Length: 483
Ligand SMILES: Cc1ncc(COP(=O)(O)O)c(C=O)c1O
Image (cartoon, rainbow, N blue to C red):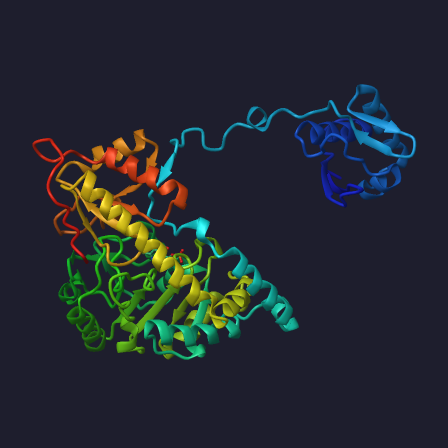
């Protein structure tokens, strides 16, 4: 017997004891109990299990436990009192955690402010509405919800999504064409495994780890240039790709929607080349100056896979996403997921279904749209005042903006940010290594990320980080480009 679990009375908690090693059983039990006390797993005052029950849990003689306790009492680790059993001594306090354990991230730079573009405002998660939906969903769920799950996802969620996506995003679907996944990244992984051979075209600027997911599935990625109208669809035929990944509502990270002519052109390409369009609608709900741009999928649901996620609208911690698939692809994707749901919690799926169906999702999105719009206005206003020589782009939608920087200044701006404890990204890492388009320099600012109380200080740190205008002196007018 090397290790086992014992039950701690009063709390009813399990206690893990490792009895491996040399020496007598009594000695090994004493060592395990000392370790549990020293590390704080057994807090001062905790009552230890009675001899009989610990002996039973560990499969050892009662006397062995009694003798071990008695010796630890003599050593001062434990104390025993008539009628109240044996407890951990008050003075047997563990070392403070930071002295007891080395840091897991000893060289991680200090982060005082974060404007990283990867997260929504985590402080704005609708905790109480989510709890209400979870409670209601769990109470109403049929028993089968607590068994092994269907890899397509819960029917309740697929029905709620079909209604919501048609109404809010112009997606043409039925619940049967929706497959739930563990966020967009999981969808890419699954799609990478089933796409026809050949490279996958991606935008020249995009998330490197999304490219890596394709590459991990054995698909080479080829870059399309990106300009102020989005991805250059006219380059697609020359790539030899049969699939293309796009962010049409809000190009990530440069900002700006795919121009209507290019939306039509990509559908034409898919039809004439037997191609497949993967539409990443990661923040499609957040558009500030006019109605959200609808999904391209509505133009041809047989050639376009619509990919959505709760990561920006609610939280990346939920790990919930959805694919709206052409009918001919559904079975293949479900087969790729496997015979049972091993990714997404059925309970979270039911909670999200309720959250959408009761209107809480729409209310949350309306509230967050106002919230992020205020943030965006504050960012643009602050820069107009403090750094008017910096052009801001990609501000009409989403939770991030790009600050265009003069040539050869991005690396220094990032170093300056790091010195101030400001976490943010430059455009550089998003660029596809094979892209032939001219290199852009800039900072990608996730203005949705900080909680309210920290936003002004993050903006201040940002202003102090930006390069001075050529020739020194900060003057002129901001030129938000309005895309
Ligand atoms: C470009 C882009 N696509 C998709 C997503 C969603 O990813 P996931 O659902 O895997 O968290 C994000 C991040 O939220 C993103 O930035």
